[in-house]
Image 1 (spheres, helix red, strand yellow):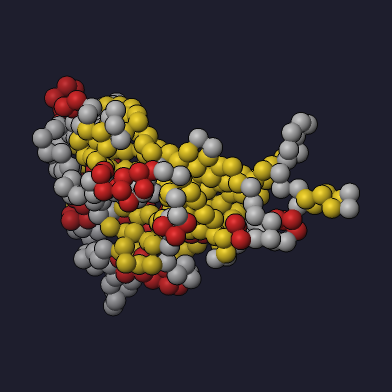
Image 2 (cartoon, rainbow, N blue to C red):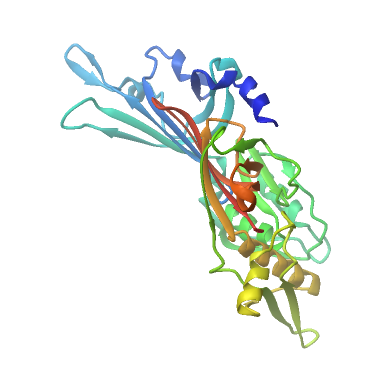
Length: 373
């Protein structure tokens, strides 16, 4: 989306607003509207999204007695559902940046000044991180795909997440074991990372899909000195390797199963640049990472090797930037940054965002990655 369109949509960023719904009801409609002076939401591809907001002077004095009406009346009770929306000018046009649960309430009684109440919590993926359990998926009679397993976990465990973000996988498996792992770790590490997929939850929607590598599609374009307030990139080859080799011994055939991914096999983004593997090979020669992992086929070994090389290559370029608050900017999207010179003016992949509204206004901080430079 062109930045001029975003400017118009958000009323030229005039009068930042936010709204917080607790169990579906706006906190600004309560008997005693909350005096909230800061709201922060952290969204990430690699962790549960979290939030915090602070309430000034939450104490009510009546008949010489002090009390906390928000706690007494159960307004900010732990376990309640919460939805945080941000935007500009009109509450009706605000956009959701997090849906989740209240998990903690902190209160401070300072030596000087007014007391303060801070409410914290996580999105729904946090529920998937808590219980460690064991389960078998598939059998010789009924094989399953990874996407089948994701759907089954969502249904069996009662997460009730929207599954429209799940992309079907094709390879059939006789048996996949979940061994004393949380559902989150199992899906992320045993399923997604084996096939170069990404797994995350946004609002109430579960994503299990290939990364969005189409650089022709990006949420918006920001230009340094204009719409981009700041940007700090880093190029680092310290942890890059030229190849990844996955090995396992097949007891049936008495032969090794070997899968290898070399420089150039990475999922391409900016093909005009060089990957970390290519740069390491040019400067240091062959640097191979060997991994022993239980695998069942040559195809599985090659897929895993490519996935690991892709994951390593994403650390080549990292950066963080800041712009005026744009609630549409979220992890799992591409963003174009310009005005940064030939090397750094390009499309990046967003891995983390911080949306914050305070007395200083509404700002969005984003963290990006790129595997070519």
